[in-house]
Image (cartoon, rainbow, N blue to C red):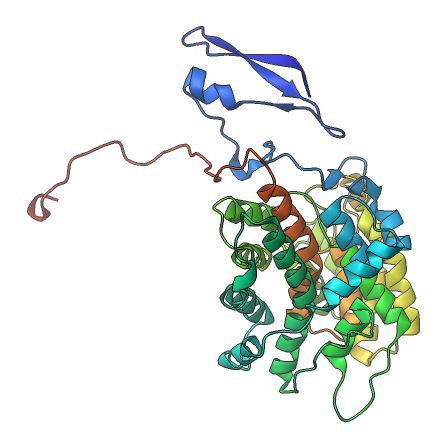
Length: 433
């Protein structure tokens, strides 16, 4: 609520306006600057929107200085320890944790939509065998808009919710189908007698020639990873989903836009870059020399998986996933290559937590550092890491999209610009140019 104002004065004209200051439940206050344009004839300049609140939201809150992440008010550590991914999906969608009956009904609803239309399955055969899995996910999710016309009216609340459920339910099936296609394996249909994460792993790794055995440690590790990545406030992909949604585009197109944004290496590719860094180091004995290169400002070498754009303290997700990562490494049988990579990772982690260079700069291991190691331990190829991220983040994307569509003040997104091109000029005939 607005309880004070900030006065902004144009020194050239002497004209002043009072802008309301709006307080949220948590976090810094924001200045309502809408009148700057209409009364002063100016716009604010904020590249990358780093100091701009682009929307009002009640879903997720981050305090980067204190290392806090809340989903609907619940600390992420409590959700990761006590909840399941589908409970977190329900929480993000509905605003409250489900009771026993609500949880049962929600699971049943999700499980009713885990299968893909057979036409969509044939869609995969149009991709090259060496296509990137994110290209498949992007294409198939966008193509879903051609198959589910019964829920495409974005002005209909029931249609919106059904589309959200379909996206959450089908995303693991799409991810697994892309993996199987690249391997040349037959598609594995969902088994709704299993849990959501168990079913996902089964679709990924089971083969007709033998029974698939569920590893409970692997299931729990992946479940926690999905929970930790379910939503993260107004990041690049979420902002893209909202911007696309503001045009009243169909939900599948909006989520496809989010997937395209997540595919960028600066956003969703960090955990893949972690593994590439470990492979580049090659052996634990090479860690000291690599760290020296990182410290050399002229080397342009970055230590991937350390530090965070938002968190200036410990990433709260990293604290949780670190223990899961260590537990998984103890219990999962590892090949020689993976064991070597994990030894390098443990050595980097130890240095980062003890070396003053990293401590002073608050370059702590972040969630991407550990999630990359977990996915590698689960035998998931590095080019599918971002796909796994997209599966998890779908819950946040659809929740943010639903919140946007329910906002009575919804308007099409239209950022302004500071124009620095040529001044107005007249066209010159070819012979006089």
